[in-house]
Amino acid sequence: MTLPISSSEDIDRLQGRIRELELERRQLVAALEILQEITGSLHFADIMQAIARRLGEEFGLDRCSIFLAERDGRTARLVASFEDPSIRNYMVDLERYPELRRALTERTTVSIPDVEHDPSLIHLRETFESRRVRSITVVPIVWRSVAIGAILLRAFRDSPPFSEADIRFCQMVAGLTAKALRTAHRFEKLQQRVGDRTSSRSADRERVALIGFMRRLLDEFANREGPWREGALARASAEEIDRLVGVALTVLQQEAAAR
Image (cartoon, rainbow, N blue to C red; front, top):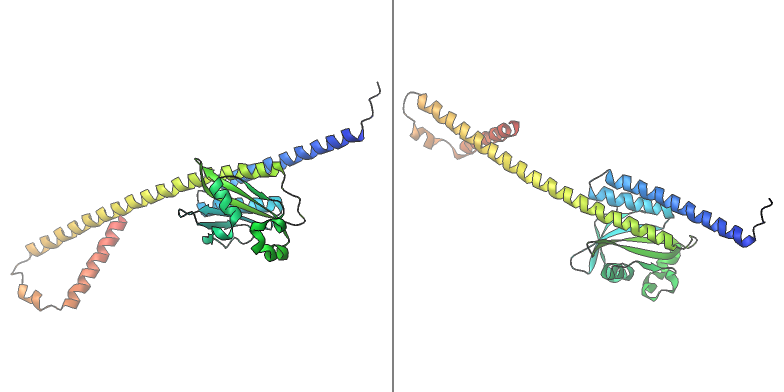
């Protein structure tokens, strides 16, 4: 049986579907790699930097930055940057980033396909021209209906525009980021509680060592013959007494740490 010859429209449709499947496969692999990276660390800074780097590489971006919202609602903290990993904990004024402010306040993805024709970014037009920036996408990081941060992606002029699939992928990564941040926050709180208990146990050991030291010292004096020689003690210099006290405290701390 002879199969009918496919029309050019059918071929184009088939090729388009193949491209969609290839994109889905690539993004699925990227999501798994991001998940592996963020689950391999419980440290907040490492998680944020890994996500910014992976997104920047995936889309070939001019900039990929992760911000966390501050309580005042007027500022945000830059915690990770694809183009310069050394930039961390940098405070920004949301008045200068209207697209970031909108994503945080409205808890919605903000897409600016052409920065040259957006009136809210006119003050940055020269910067965008020098860096050949074409589009900006800001995806909020939402945890329990609260926008706790956002991922800002800035693409080059010659890069393809973000598709709906690309935006869905970034939203999925933002969801993973929110969960990773929550896990890292719980881990840091646990570390803090353990540290507090450790400090308390160390103080208890120092007190036990002090009591043991004083008991042995008094027993030694009690077993000696002769008066306590309080007059001789009065004639001792204050500096020498302070020195002996310092030596005794150092010994106590070392004894407590060794137990």
